[in-house]
Length: 78
Image (cartoon, rainbow, N blue to C red; front, side, top):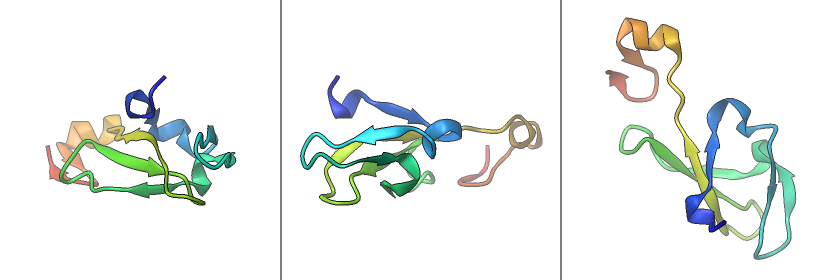
């Protein structure tokens, strides 16, 4: 699978084991670099903490409670 096709789920991302094909780093999602802004996109980029290789995207999860209130903590009113 191409890294650009990989989409990690926010609720399980911190505990997911990631592998960098470029430098060989292996570690939990909580150690990876996450870059981007949900206000501009529904994804954030996930990068290797050692070499900054692109590893995939992190998807924003909307909680049911936020959806019921019509509010998203990252982007405001929905």
